[in-house]
Length: 234
Image (cartoon, rainbow, N blue to C red; front, side, top):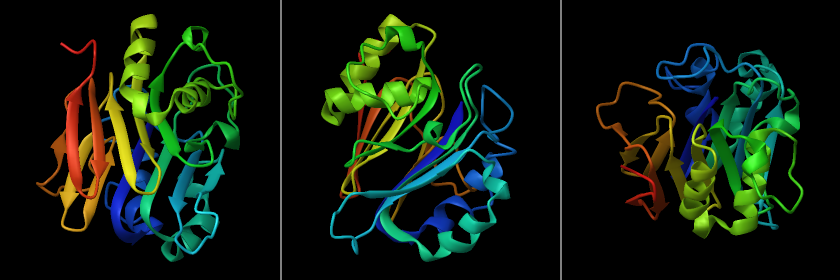
């Protein structure tokens, strides 16, 4: 399992989203409050963001196979990285999966950033292309990229039907949109005057946090949030 967070709104530093909050990803890497599977997330981390200063317009990423709490370089640079769209995650590796930087979210197709919080049997994934890693999350990300993020809800529902034990919480963004699914694990939302946070669990005790119901698709654009039940929800 993992913990992940996404931000879409006015530019904020990566540190303000990942490192600074009292129960942010840094703390969730060793003491998550709502994690149902696993105790720590020490098998890697990753942060991706979109910079308006880059002509190519694609996402930037920084990933590691080390615990987030042990990366002094990231802690020193993250306050200087600012973006209006961020996806970050800390990883608890699925049993039997390798621990390597390429296995840490966020994954990308060059346009979208994507994180998977959960587990899935790779045998049920009808992937035809190449994934960034052999781990289940990377394979699932590659399948979602193949089918397109506009079909995220259908893809998650189809994979969930093939693997009833799968947990398929997805969080993805492309700089102007953020989409997510809940399928077997927690996701919370905080709507602020300057943007929207989606996170596996709240990063502080702000009373504005709300929990997204299980088996739902979330779409965020221009601070507008839309929730849609997924096929297979009860």
